[in-house]
Length: 336
Image 1 (cartoon, rainbow, N blue to C red):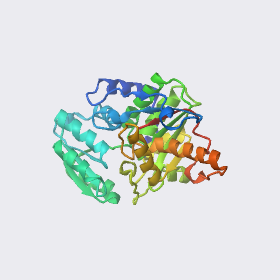
Image 2: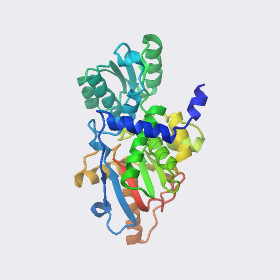
Image 3: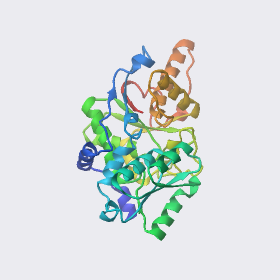
Image 4: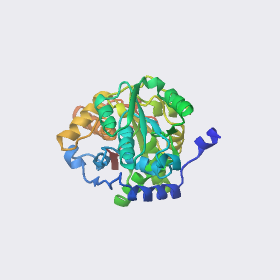
C-alpha cells in the first residue's frame, strides 16, 4: 500500500481545494511577488527577475501553507486535543506547527537535529511545545518509536500529499500574478515546496514553464535521487542552509519532482552566504535556505558577467542535472 501511495500525484482539484484552505487559514497571508528585481541586482542581463516573498509569512517561511492544508485533514482525536502530534524539523516547519498548535490548543512535539540553530528550539518551546534535539540520522526512527509506543500522530514536514497540495497554492498565486513565467527556481530540502509548485504550474497547462529545484552542494539528496532514480538517503547532510539539509529526500516529493520539474541546480555554501548578503544589502532579510533559489540566478549572472569581461567560460556543469548554463534566462521567478 505504501508503494502505491508513493506513486500517487496530487491533482489540480486537490491543489485548488488546498488553496481554499490556505486562503481561509489564520496561519497564512497572500505574499507579494516583487517585480523587476533585476534592476536592483543585475542590470543589462537577459533575466526579468521576480521574487515571491514567502519570508513575509507570520512565522517567517512558506511552511505554513502546506501545514494549513495538513491541519484541515487532522483526525478528530488530534483536533480535540486528545492525541499529540509529532514532527521532525530543523526549524521552519517546527515553528509553524508549534505556533498553530498553540493557537488551536493542540499538543505538539518536535524532534529537531542536533545541528539546528538553538534559537529555533527556544522559539518552538515558547509556544508550549515539547522539543527534543536528536542526531539527524536518528530522526525518522525516533519518530517511528514515538508513534509506535505512545500513539502520537505524525505530521510529515514535507513528504505528504496534503502538504504538497498546500504548497501548490504558492504556484497558483504565482500564476495569478504572472501568468506566463519562463522559469521558476525553488529552494529544495525535502522537496515539498518545489513538488507542490511544480505540480500546480504544470497541471495548470504551463507545460513550457521550466521549474528547477535548488539545493546546497553538500545537502543534495534530491540531486542524488535524480541520479539514482529513487529517493536518496543522505544521513550526514549538512549546509549553512540548515533548513535545506534533511537526511533524505521524500519519496512522494521525488516522484512529483521527477514528473513536473526539469532537474536540480546546486549551489555552494559560499554562494548561499553571498546571495543572503546580496539580498540583505538591498533590504530583504532572509536566511541562507531562503536565498538558495536567488543564489542560483545570482551565480549564473555573475558567471555571465565574468565571461563577458574576461572572455573565459566558467564550467558550472557540476551544478546541473537536467539543465545547462544558459537555463536561467527570460522571465524568472525565485522564492525567498
